[in-house]
Image (cartoon, rainbow, N blue to C red; front, side, top):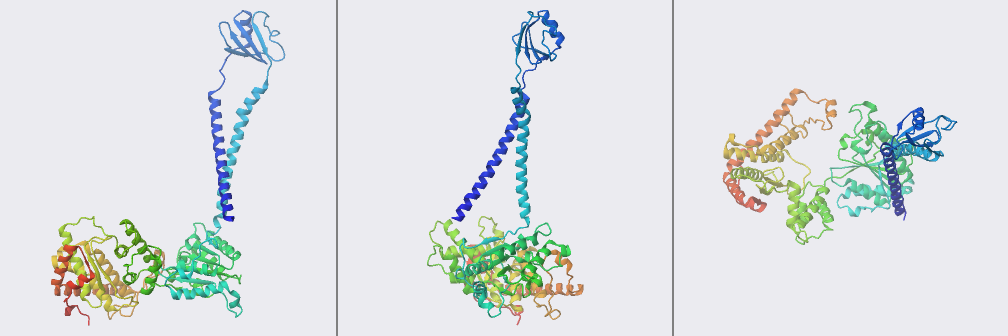
Length: 623
């Protein structure tokens, strides 16, 4: 009932506002019409003549009629039907006393009435003033509305989710068992605060949810609010910061004031790294708007005012850039890591997303979970949605396994571009290129398994050789990385071996870029260089440009030259290994490329049959 009343009042307010705008518009129209009336509807002008001339002509019989209105004279000459001239006599005496002879001219005296003139005066003078006043009031009212918006500029934009919203619970969120266990304690703090206070335990001020994008940080925060049956204020970190200094701090104060009035409650700040970055790394010093906002958050979370039953949940995927004062105990007491789901969790998440969709019994979600290593919950939700879209496009009532596979491939490597026209020469070159990736990746022992090879353009790629790890991995060795580097260069080396060094194409541009990035990652961040740089890291700040300018490089130019040499050495070694594999298995390369030209797409089972019997040359082995 309350919500309905609120809607009625709100609509009524809108109607009143619309009526007022309509009245102002009508007033402007009236004013415009009055101006037109005054301009185009003036009474016909009469010729002004002197009074002596009128008396002289009247006495000579040249004037037919004189109409007297007060002191005004309207003269109708002989031969005319209406007055064409006007004059004015002296006040205080009659026209006969001033020289007009009786009987010469018809004289009519009309009693002067000022009422008509008064109304004309009012209409012509006062009414425009009234209309202008109405317009000014309308303008002031509009300015007042803008002023109220200006006054609310420092108010918090946080959205409150209470009992009127559909609640989310932990049961509705698949996976993240460890994270949910940590957050269940937060729920108990909100539900039973005295249970912990009796033992001298303090309620945590803040919980920081850290994880890659799409892993469900926001959903877990809403589930905490739903489980605790507490009000939930949600706001993004970017909504605090404005162009004007002090606005962000004002919004923080307003947010915490509202939260304290609704305590016990939860404040959820999404993407807190937008406002919580390390201080002193940007321009503006202590007067920077972002830093002032961060200072106010620090004060509100652990200032002089204690005992408020408000818990701050915050989410970020860049915990490394947050200010240390924000992460210390007393502010964010807990850090909950939310990682990408493993195979078991991926299957559970897929079941949740496919649960409300009509799915054929032949759909194998376990196989899909095995293929989607490294996918986030958002990626899996996207796959489920794309499956439904593909099924609907094909006029099916149920989602079958082909729909799911096509959706997975579309999300992972992009949609097929069958409309792109390729010449026979381009198809042949693409077939050798993709076959080179497949042969090198299959032969090298620490590479991943071939899942599919196609020469149909997908996304921005002219063809795709798709490798999927057989199991989830948390760590990678130098040998694995070196095999991946060789596999990345397999396409370019296959072109070189088949067509010659001078005939290689731009088709390997993306492969070379990824190989260079991986080699540099090995040397700079993983300490996987040669004996000269082994077990040393040379991390470079990857934050904003100003951060990189302020923080000096932590190594010399000589070391930078060594890093470049190490990267070049890794790329050269990978190219030589790929060349050895391809030259040692040319028959397999030719056979796979011919099948690709014939079928365009070859699945994993057929690739394994074609490459059965391939061998690793001694020059390509690392051990």
